[in-house]
Image (cartoon, rainbow, N blue to C red; front, side, top):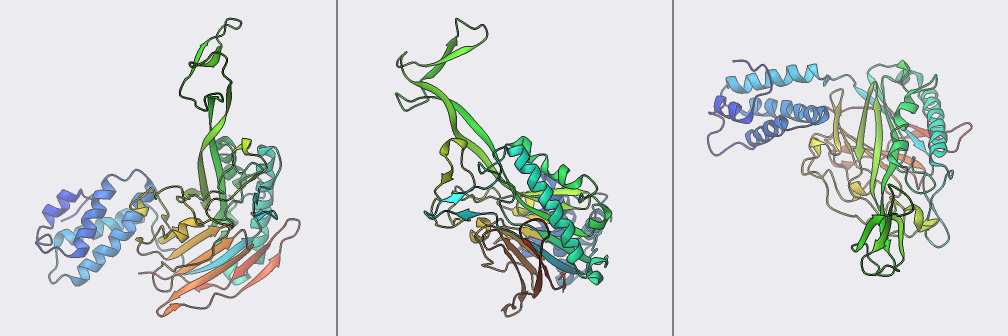
Length: 419
């Protein structure tokens, strides 16, 4: 038999009825679950993630099954065909991690976080893009020639959390939306063929869509504020409090929808991973003054979160993504401490851009790579998961950047583990 596309769960269960006799094998349960999720996946990346794990589970079940099963063979065949069509083909054997070690956070003498940058967000973003391009291009020069020109070696460049955040702690969404196109553009842009074998993580960008409200300062409430036509200006209104015409009603920023998003490029593809557990230092509204006290902890990357994880399965749009047949995981700072990817399986490379976080747990398969770049330490670190626990951190050499702050740290090349 042959499937022309990934089958629905019920069709597969009917065809593979022999495998669905109770008690069910745990791998059969996993395959059923992934087929159900594949049918309702909304993003191409979610489907890629599921295909990668489906292939592994099908191979595992085929190995352990006592007799050949036509439906299982057909499922494995269509998964492989679909994976190849979607670019999930093993391309790299080794990886070189390259950290952009630069400070992205600091504190005053009273322990309050300081936001650095220009007063104008647009100009601030443009300056940071300029410096990032310099860092990426100089990093390429520092990678040893054998690895640089080896098409089977993936180079991973990563900057720390909070690289794009500005003087006020967050950019507006329209400013953030320009970052990736600007990084790609120009003669010094990352769209050049020289970066085809690079996974580029440009740190994170903080975006805030502010919530502007009218508020009655007499009542200390906004619930009784209403609007009436302005008799002196056609088409305009006047805000007033229903509990008193003379109450002090003013407009201001009283909240924001905040996103802290990692910016990722591989070849012609862009990918974003949002930080799910936000600390009290991820945003400060413009009305709060020059500083903000950190909630729950005394360091950047505070171990204090504002809510639960958005995803029950990180493959469906969270911190797991698959590129060129490699399953990556990403935990942005606090996400790592909160063990966001504790249930993720088959991770080959775990990336941790942070500002006040170090590697706490290794969550990859054996031989997997965990890569952290921190903006408070201004340093990078790489650990390899061994059978008896973590090995010593990989060796690397640092090179000061010319013309901009920070340095580039290039770590030794290591094999990428495959299941």
